[in-house]
Every structure is written in C-alpha cells, then in structure tokens.
Image 1 (cartoon, rainbow, N blue to C red):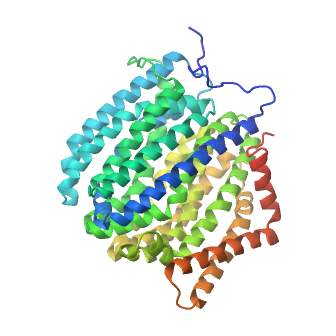
Image 2: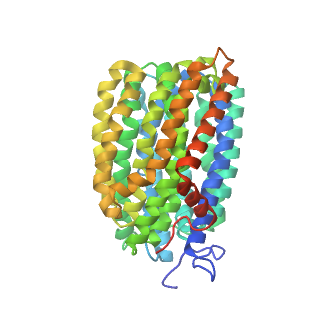
Image 3: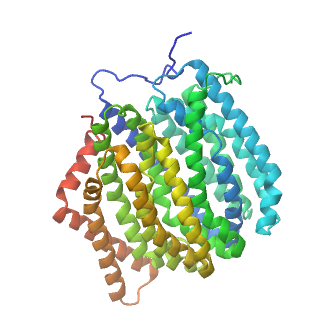
Length: 501
C-alpha cells in the first residue's frame, strides 16, 4: 500500500501540471465553485420565491422551529473531520476509511438522537406537528457521509468542477420537488421534502464523482490528529450555532408561527449573500490558504485581496436591499409578506458586518489556529444572545435592531483577535474595504432620495427605477473614485485571484 493516497480517484489531479500555476488553479476553483453556486442558487431562488408566494408565513414559522435542533445536531455531523482531512499535508487510504467510519457513526447517532428528542422540541414550541417534522428530517443525516467524504477528497485536489455539477443537479431536483409540493398543497411538508431530495442527489453525485466508495474502518486508532482538528472546528460551529439560532430559539417561544415566519423569511432574504455566496468562496479560500500556510506574507496578501473583492460585491447588495426593501418585498414575495419590509431594512444594514466576520475563520483555520474561530464564536454567542433576549420584547423589529446594534461590537473583537494571526493590519483591512463602502453608502443615500421624490408609481416599475439608479450610481462612483480597485478586481478574475509571493 502506498504511503500517501491523495485522493483515491485517479481522474482527480493531485499535483500541479507544468505551466499550471497555483494562482490559475485557484482562479478555476473560484469560477467553478462560485459559478456553480450562482447557477444553483438561481435555480433554487426561482423555485423558493415561487414557493414563498404559494405558502403561508405560518408554514415558514413551523419550519423554523425545527431548524434550531436540526442546525444544532448538524454541527456534529463530521464536516469538521472532513476539513481536518483537507488541512493535512498528506493522507493515507486508511485515514480515508477511518474518516468514512467516523462519519457513519456520527450521523447514525445524530439521526437517532433527533428522532428521540423531537417531542421535547415540540413541547417547547407548543406545536405538536414539530415532532413529526423533525422525525422525517432525521433522514438527512443518512446522506451526510456520502457528501462530506467526497467533499474532502475533491477539495484537497482543488477540484471544484465535480462538486459544481453535483450542486447544480441537486438544486434542480430539489427545486422540482419544492414546486411540486407547494402546488400539490403539502404546506410545511414542502419545506421538509425539498432538502431531503437535495442532500440525497448531492450525496449520490459527489460519491460518484470522487470515486469515494470505500469500506469504512471503525478502528479509529491513529486518527487523533484529524479527530482533534475536527473537534475544535465543531466547537467553533457550536458557538456559531448559538449566535445564529439564538434569535429563532428565543422568538419561537414568544412569537406566533405567523410572526416567526415573517422574521425568519426576512433573515433568509437579507442573508442570501453571506449564506449562499460566501461559503463556497470560503471553501476555495480554505484550500488555497492551507497551501500558503508556510508563506504568511502571501497568505496575508491573499486574504486582503479576497476581502476587497467580496465586499465590492456584498456592500452594494446590502445597501440596495436596505434602500429598496418595501418595493422589493412586494414585488418578489407579494402583499401577504408586506410586514417584512421594515425588518429587512434593519437586517440589511447589519449584514456587512456579518459578511466580514465570516471571512476570518478560513484564514485562521488554515494557519493551524482553529481555536481563534472558537473564541470568536463564543464571544458572538454571548453578545448576540443577550441582545436577542432584550430585543425580543419589541417583536421582530426589536430582534432586527439587536443585530444592527451588536454585530459591529462582535466584529471589532474578532478583528482584534484574528488579524494578528493572519498577519494583516487593521489599516490595511480598512483600506481594502473603504472604496466599496463609500460607493455603496453614496448609492444607498441617492436611491432613498430618488424613492422619496418619485411620484406615485406602480411597485414593479418603482423597483426597476430604483435598481437602475442604484447600479448606475455605484458603477459611476467606482469609475470616478476607485479605478484602481476595479482594475485589480478585473486582473484577479482574469489572472491570479490569490497571488503567491
């Protein structure tokens, strides 16, 4: 047996070919991973927004009640172990079999735990249907080993093309299931069935692409390194769970299913960029940073440039969302969701801080310091949970205000703790963000002014006018005051997004 197996699929390249620079590989990885995410999300969004228009806010409120337990147990599903395999310089076939065995043990146990604990969650929320929803959702864990293992093997090779295909096919299948369920009158069960279809198809496609069907090993001797790394990552995810689900957990006890559905759908809309576009970019970044971990100058430079490009896209999205909240909600979701508009406006202003926050962990993890993410997560969990306990007294608006009030504090503490590890100065980070921030703020203010000056206009036309004005203002500002940033972004897309010094 060879000493190093990386990965077992001979069709997946494991070394750089001649003339194929690391920067070129990263650029292709970004294109495949983020490009596929865009295609997959366009498919899912088209279906999701049509389903939202068909279903009732109460359905989304009930679904959110199941989400707290589901997200909590999913933190322990072994993706941290898979990340540990990605981070290892070399892996053996035995380690791959051990990882597969760990994933099976963990996920079978998690599925059983969710099945048994479901009645307790239903009693907390005072909704009996939550028991049945959670027990069916336990099926999700069965597909996780067949997603996490090939994810680790393909990510090690920086082969995101096969992952892209799996994501697109799975998204099509899930979107079809969601639309069919909504049209057939399945109600909240539509939201349960669609993810099961998504995970099942993705697991089958990923396993086939990576040729990762191996016999699992349940002899975990010698796997302490991967297990330790995975445990630290899982601990960080625990605190991420506390800060990301605390508001839903608290609100679920105080709000009716209708108002919980209004609030959680507002979160979904405002977090589209940070939860749908940033994670695939972070996956590529982690794989790239892990290759650069011995050259801290190159890693710091890569991190700064990545932040600049991501925020260049994120900030106009958030400022535009805040400025056009009312016509956007009415146009995309319909009149029955009109109560979302003021909540969306507040949450959108908080999301730039969250987006920057989630960019720290991949760089710190790749530097071999996953404990930084754990401490940051613990800080955020404490700060945000306390804020939500206060804000819930004022309903969904109070919770949205809690995000806006406390996330800047959380981000400041994370910067203080993370930047020295990455090797980036605060002024360099600020300089990277400033051009996009100034352009986005100017855009938001002008769009709001135009909206106030518009005569009574049909809502679809009003949204079209505001989006056109916003895009024009943002582009013009960058051309006038931030040409170097635009040139750098174009150069990164065409050449090397993550340069090596």
